[in-house]
Amino acid sequence: MRPDSVLPLRWVHAVGGALSLLPDAAGRLLRPARYRDLPAARPRPEPLPPAARRVLLGPVNTAGQAHAWARALEAAHPGEEAAHAGAAAAPPALVARSLSATAAGPFAFPVDIAVPPALSRVSRDWQREHTRVRGFSATDVVIESGLPLFGPAFGQSLQREVRALQRRGIRVVIVCHGSDVRDVVAHAARLDCSPYRLPALAASVPAVQRRTRERRRAIRATGAPVLGTTHGVLIDLPEATWVPVVVDVAAWAVERPPLAARPDAAQPDAAQPDAAPLVVHAPSQSVIKGSDVIDAVLGRLAAEGLVRYERLEQVTHEAVAAAYRRADIMVDSVRMGGYGVAACEALAAGRVVVSNVLPAYRAAIARDHGLEVPIVQAEPETLEGVLRGLLRDPAAARATAERGPAFVRALHDGRLSAARILAALDSPAALGRSATLDGPAALGSRQ
Image (cartoon, rainbow, N blue to C red; front, side, top):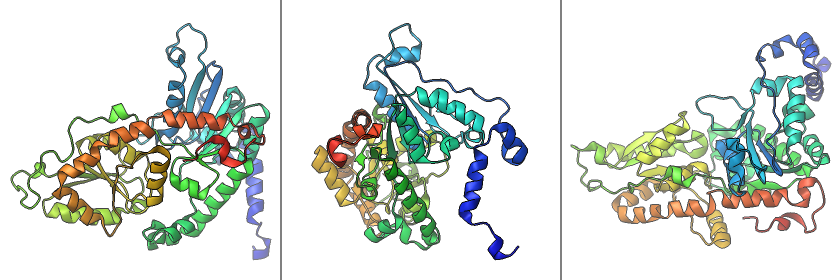
């Protein structure tokens, strides 16, 4: 085939999009391979339970946050327990359900509604029913990462999906987690230690930049309120409002204080290797987190007998939780400049958390909430010195760790998150209307 006879890529996408809108019967005839993996038994979508307000959150449930926000929203409205227990009572003020259209498996987080990915991606008949029965039964929708909640039901167009919901009087907000909208070129320019400066990621940066730029454009085109789970999102989407990630503080509580009993760092007891402090690192993405630096530093300290090092990757959330409870120190990241769910879990467990959190983010939390982030600061070049300092002065390290549970309880136990999600949903922009106030000020403090 001559080069000039090749269809333009946009035409290929257009044809593929048109075919994805076909009913299943036609799709099976024209694209049999695509329909081969559809499950024979298809769960029928059900409407959300009766309530004055019905909130649907999804479709990715990143780090279990859609599920955590759903529980936080319900906790802010008494009477929800009756809906779960099936008790005969008046409908509660609010019910919230999390939804995930990602693959289930040992690494999946709890979710209320698990949508089979093949159905979500392929079956046009199921997508229509899912949208009509479940989606249109909501009064409020929280869309994660700018990804269409109903798959290709609206031609994979976020703007069309948002408009369709709003025309039915359904309030819509969009929440972003960080990597989904990150301007990776700007991140590399801001941080000398940015992972996007590394040769390992250099080849992927242009494609990632194009994808996240398009995602930001699509989100802005909806006009819906935007929330961000990290302060980094507020840089990439300045119109966003911070909505904290949520951690169950009580579930992570550990009675044993960190670094409570260890041999003298200068004279480790070789006969008691288990007495050395345990340092845990459980990266979600090793290159992004700076695991190469962390592994090298902790390898040296372990070789000296100063610490035991436990590196976790591709393990279940339960295994990570067990490791945090055993640990004395948790090293999160030395490259990204922010903190997220993993750091909050370790803080809630009262562990010493070491990570790179930019001064601007620390200052924003101090200014807006009067709290100091109890995460020990470390960059790639300072990590080893920071860890040796913690080992030399365990009392000071414990004092920092003791502030962790209270910090998480104040900002990350779900109360602030629920308030900010509801404030965004109650804003005129959630229904596609112009706000009385300009921009995010209508939602109150952004951070």
